[in-house]
Length: 235
Length: 369
Image 1 (tube, rainbow over the protein chains, first blue to last red):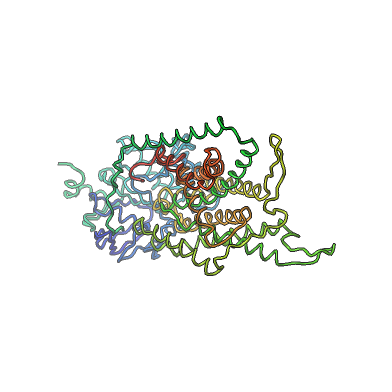
Image 2: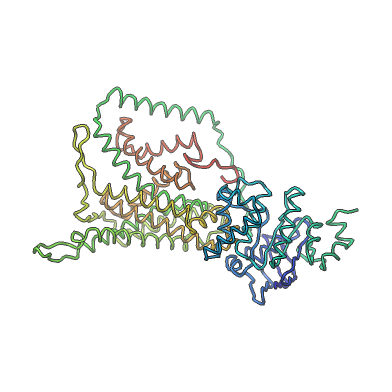
């Protein structure tokens, strides 16, 4: 479904991605794990079109989408839920969801989607008139995911969805991701919480200073001694 | 992505302690109150009709300032830059309206009663409407081009650079207008229906005064436009996407919003409002020349800061307030009317001492400033 070949991206003076290649099959959850600054967010932002690739290719459904403008990529069905949630703080929950459905022109479809999100995340329904900035961290993360789902993406890019959340909420978020995937959306999951990510993912790639150093089935990666030592913190 | 060397985040604050600024502000304020007291209570030489007359002219000029100020505030909200060429966009609108009235005035025909009338007098509503449509369209186009040519290539540059480009664009447009239309001060040819100086006569406390037709037109149209703009920003899809882009450009792009498109549309809307303000200015004040946009532009910028830049109701309030201060202030304080511009800026300084982010402005965090 998504095929990234030899991707090179510069972030300022930093050569942030140095020939990254990976792929994702339809219906999969693929997780990218790695330390801070390994280039995970850069990779997602390049797929989303926010950062230009100097070399390499991003292909989506056999179509070259490298360096396409972000809004065109969204229209093709790739939606990113950015790191740090990035809720529009001065807009209501409802307006945030409407922004998520910016590419949708059918008003009826938007209303249906909003209903669907309120069913999935009841707390958002209760707060629909409240300003986004007044929500708690967990609610904001729900809203960010719901906002991402408003455009009915075929591929959802999640950047650190569990960041800064309590263990209970993390569990809830991961359940949500799994149910999103079960309903047919492919997911690329960038996570610091490698343990949880590897449990729900089908396949995993380990990124280190802009290069992929390990790839394989999530179960295998979970057993890999190097990963256990570096990312899972088990002695 | 950002390669440039960033200036240090924290600028050195003024060494003048806050207390000194406050004391200065309080001294000026108490001077104002003392003057107000002397003029209004002690001398009491002005009759109510004078105040009403000043109030009316304040409202009219305030409406114009508000419309232009909204343009500053919208652009600032989205790009965090002051579009110093905005006054020139208004000037272009004034000229466009001027040429429409020239044209409709030049077309003359003999009416059924045998009199020779011009199109602008035979069809005053049509020609006024046409002047506004043309003025707004031309100003909107120039706003659009201004952004494309002068600001878009500098989008990623440090913030000072588009500002310099804006000042350059302002000088360029003034000179272009001077070159094209000569430095002559021209007279706006109002249709007779809204001839300058004509108006409804009313009686206030036994004295007669007129409410000028042009004033009524200016004020009511600016209120309508402001209301329309506010509703658009709150409710429409474009308005919401403008707010989203203002809040966070990359997240807005991740929603599928065409950020550059929204920025262009912002300049178009600002230009439309400035164009309407320009035609109003021409109709009400009657003069048009290449420099006509400068002072209203600066005043509207002041209004936007006064109300809290980036805040739309703030720009409206600031414009109205500044119009009133300019019109009523000199008389109420018993100072020369020539000092109205000085007074406007003194009020700005006072407001900024006590409320640095403007009347309705959000209290900005260090980071945002």
